[in-house]
Each structure stands twice: as structure tokens, then as C-alpha cells.
Length: 259
Image (cartoon, rainbow, N blue to C red; front, top):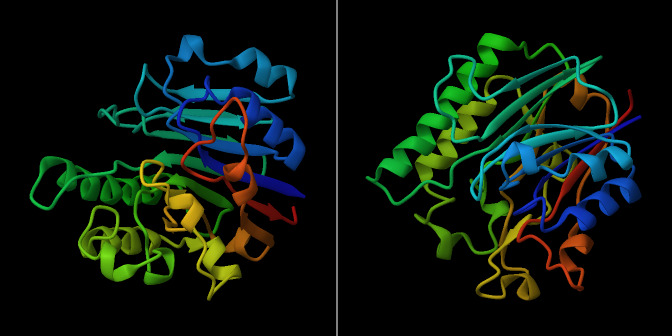
């Protein structure tokens, strides 16, 4: 069995205990985190190592940042784009025995006509090119992360309210759909074709208590892993947790495979 997860943790140092406790409790073998928001030298490697995980990190102070933490040592790790272009610390890739993982934090973007909006579309386009140059849809590949796009109307609590807003613009959705034509499947949607489930809720408006969310965190897989998938779920309970440490505004998504 292989169990993987993706989670925008919104600061790995702030939520370290919550994250590690969840990983151990869920029996996660490999996790991709986004918005770790810490310089690589200050990443909490020791607590993860004590819990049985090795972490590969591509990050910076205060903003963005991604990491892959796994029980197995990766055979190879690539941080950022292979051509060296600035990726704002949003992309990390790890190859393991039998499968590969690409963990990504897609830019939120901006309003139509802005540079940030254009960069978001560019990022998704380049991400597909990256897959085409380095992987095959016939090999076991997991692409996970916070994509900052709700793909369909099932992934938005109110499509009319969100129409034309950042995260649900037509060209953003088209760019993500085009990205998937590499040969990727939205695992949650494959296993739950009609369910409205969300992974992000706006903290400032208290949207979680009303379940007014978006599904913008995904585990995408190629056909070899789709055929071995047993489950793909959103853990809303960990998002609901009360305590000294507030949860992230995202809930983790996890999947289990027969490998």
C-alpha cells in the first residue's frame, strides 16, 4: 500500500506539531506541503526525522515554499524548473522507487489584465511542458498541490457568485484542463464524480462554518496509478480542530494506492 497526501499548511513551523501528528496518525508515506514559508535552514527537519520522515525543501522566508516529506529516501530531487528560471519557490519533484511526485504551489494570480494573472496562466502552461519533457503518461506519476483553480462548478460552493473571480475565471479553468491533457486524472473526481467537497475556506469571512469553500487542492495521477487507486479523500476533521494552534485555511487531501 502507498498513502500520499497534499496540504497547504500555511507555515510549517507554526503548524509543525499538528502536521506531524496528522502524518503519523494517518500513516502517510509521502506528503507534499505548500506555503511552508521558511528558509531551508530553519525547516524543522529534526522533528520530521524523529517521526520517520525525510524532507526535501525548496523554500524561502515568509512566502511560498514547497517540500516533500517521505518515509522512503528519494532517489532524486529536483528543486524548481530545470532551466533555472525563477519559480518563486513553487515547484519540487522527487523520484522514488516505482513512482515520482511533483509537488506544486500554483500562483494565486490576479485580476484579468494584470501581470500576476498572466503569470498564473504561464506557470500552468510551463508546468505541462515540464511534464512532457521529463515524464511519460505511461509511468506512475503523482502531481499534487494547491493549484488555486476550482476546475468545475462542482468545486465551488456558488458558481454564480464566483464567476469571473480569481480562482474560477474561465481562462484559468481552461489552462488547468489543458494541463491535464498531458495524461493526468483528477483522482478525487474520478472516485467521487458527483460530490461537492471543498479543500479551502476563507478564514476572514468564517466560510468554513458555512461550508462555503472551493476545491483547489488536488492529487492528479497518470493511468497506471489511477488503476491502482483505492481512495481519495479530503480530511475536513483536521481543518475543524480547535486548540492553541489554529488550522490552515486548507484541508489536506490524501489518497491510497495498491502498490
